Image (cartoon, rainbow, N blue to C red; front, side):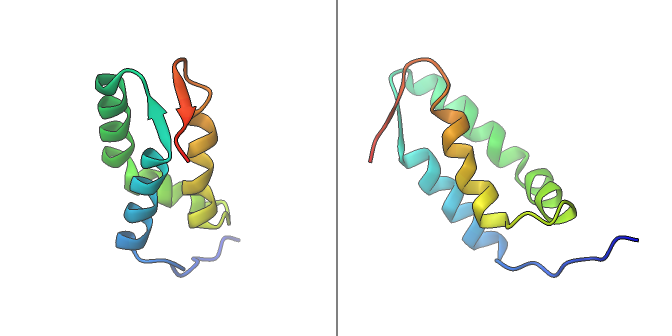
Length: 79
């Protein structure tokens, strides 16, 4: 029995946080950064749906993307 959770955050707040995540990671290859960022924004609603369906806080889930990005070669913490 699955219950529908009400969104805790607006889509705009979550998109802003995703932008902040990308600003917090320095990519040596800007082209790679742009491709990854576009991909994450194209799949934004799928990411949020996954978090909501699995009872994961949406903001925490978006923030965890930073750790994934930092595992890519030639990326560094920007702040």
